[in-house]
Length: 297
Image (cartoon, rainbow, N blue to C red; front, top):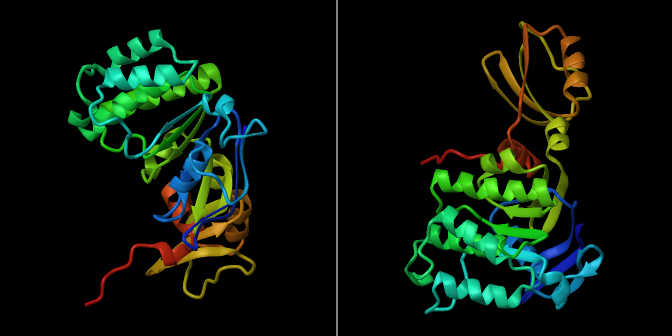
């Protein structure tokens, strides 16, 4: 299990992580989301053992990650900007990883190389951003990691290659119980692959739950009343809007209980709609304050 306990990290007086706590179960695909500047990349660098925390703990199976080679050799980290030595080819970087990671599987590396069809003799600096991501991915997954940390992992990849990357990852999750923690702004994509979600804001964990629990806790309802119809009291309204008689409500609670309560007020029309992860993200962060606003000139 991947754990963070009361993690604090400051840079020149700026508190990038502020008592953050996280739990990613073994074999989970954990989606880390939040606005720009929330501290996601800083958190991932702690989990990769790159940063030393000011306070708190970053743990894998109860052991500290920082300066712990026995733990770090089980972790693969693919950042948004890929690291490579200036003159290094893909082959050179693969050999470097093989020398550093005892679990590196040369046979698997060759199979992944065939899958991505990159010329391993080419210098990394001459590859496109998408090709660099593919090269980094085939090297990282050849390490046979127990934890895969991904920061915007498929940015720059075409749709076919995005599916290929996710296919390899999900296969490892299913077959080997690999834990994947992924930070991405592509919430639609995360919704397809994640079973746990953590929402960060201003260096704190706003909430973390399974995706199914998140979707059960917020409900989108459209309804219309005859003239004089009113909503019942006691609703926890996160956001509401209206177009003529038609109202759209984002409510906190279970769909069954809210539907029963609203039906008792005899609306002309009532419909429960599914919420996307993007909508959950917006409303959990503060409702209308995070919606796209029109520019008034």
